[in-house]
Amino acid sequence: MSSGARADSSAVVFESGRSFDLKAFAANFGGTTVCALEAGTLVFAQGKPADAINYIEDGQVQISVVSRHGKEAIIGILGAGDFCGVGCVLGNGKRATTALCTANSTIVRLERANVLRAVREDAAIAEFFLVHALRSGVQLRDNLISQLLDSSEKRLARTLLLLANYGKKGSEATVIRNVDQEALAQMIGTTRSRVNYFMNKFRKLGYIEYNGSIAVRPALAEEVLHREPPSADAVQASPATLRVSC
View 1 (cartoon, rainbow, N blue to C red):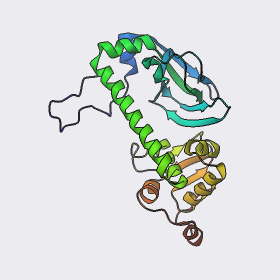
View 2: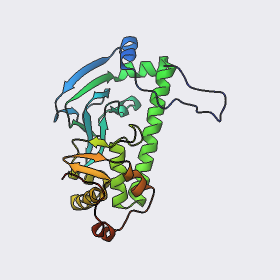
View 3: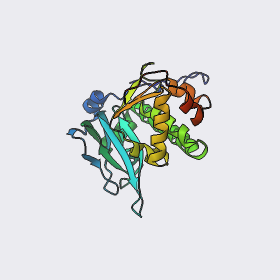
């Protein structure tokens, strides 16, 4: 890894597309433990001591939070290449969320002390984590704006596109697995019945294919996010242009 800083302020200051080099980190700084976890296994629990970052090498992890009154909300679904539990590097002594494997996963534990040493001693690693933190902050801002201003239909479309990594894997449909309608409802702040209604609408329009797993078509971004979506009456009046298996 090498720093991407440039003197020209009009150029890109940071290289945002860089991936985490786990082997190089382990070789230079140590403090890594690889864990093979089955679906349904906790990575960490809310309120427990926070002393490590967790890197998802493979699999899927659901992030949730529970209020003092026992109300639970799913706030994110993470996949390969993502991190969870990063708040510990800021001195958070306890986990603010719960992380649960929703698929068989390979999770690498990065000890907090080793991560801090790497950030202090290696400018490229410091840049990587800075960009990661900034990107996460921007996404949280966009999530808040969407929650405040968008309809539940648009929030669902945006969440499906985020889970499908829209724009990162070409133009073909991308499949979302291990995420049910109840989880989607918690993530966008609506009821399961509303999610079911919009999922059926998207399916009739050919934006998604839904049969346990969800295949998201690029048309969902173009038609639902970039334009006003057709009315429910229009959806019922016109037949789907694509054959979709139920």
